[in-house]
Image (cartoon, rainbow, N blue to C red; front, side):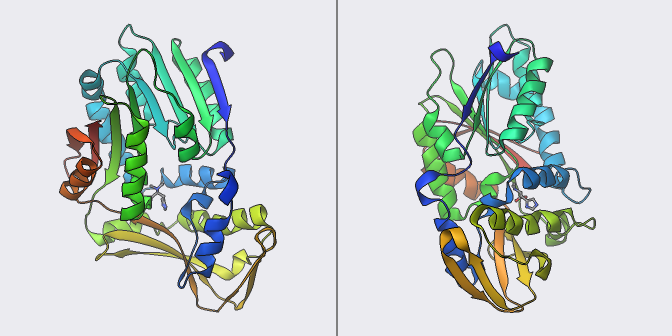
Length: 323
Ligand code: AVI
């Protein structure tokens, strides 16, 4: 298998500004934490469990849409190298690999994820399942990984960004991100993006307040991760999870509420900030999209929409764009 696997480990930090985003967020009022700190090894496993929860429709809907259109995507793009951002356990990518695997051409897959452990084990599983597959796994942040990848000599690339992860960025950060993706692709290359659409708030809120408490554990894990990473003293058991749908902004907002006043210390960042009982820290936004606005943002960033697929209830959409 190793002859078909290339491995690049860039680490899970972005180097120079390590922790600056945490300092900035905790000095904000109201306090925030960057959601990228959810994903240490434990957080990535908790997220895999979220994807299987009965209330969390996002993954199932996306899988259903992808299953119904994977072959059409492959026909529309022709042979190409699949580059997936935040690939996790690569579950959904199998649907695309199956579609591209039907042809005689070589099969290239480049999964990118901060969780090196999950990346490696899923890459090995894929190599066993697809005998002609060649994998180049990159462990690192999106930004670091994208800047390392060069265009393939033989086939165009399709950058895949599933799971509505675009929704975890603010509108401004989302636009910056799309423009960064665009600048890393060549004319004629493809971008496949899966997004969660606006729908009744009750359905959305249930998905982020599951009855088994997995989302709560995932949310609280950000504090454990930050404690470990920056020698912090967050008293994790003094915080509780809540999430609500902000209809004006069209986004779910996830928070941790603190129940005991004290001083938050992150020793390796030299940070000390007071926190009051009842105060909240916003840990995530998850935007729910209105398709026409998203298509026009993509267009502004230089992406042409090739095709859009949704499920029959219009809960989730997959967009295939070309640069
Ligand atoms: C990864 N991301 C798209 C998920 C979402 O739905 O925003 C993260 C998540 N947070 C709570 N549940 C799932």
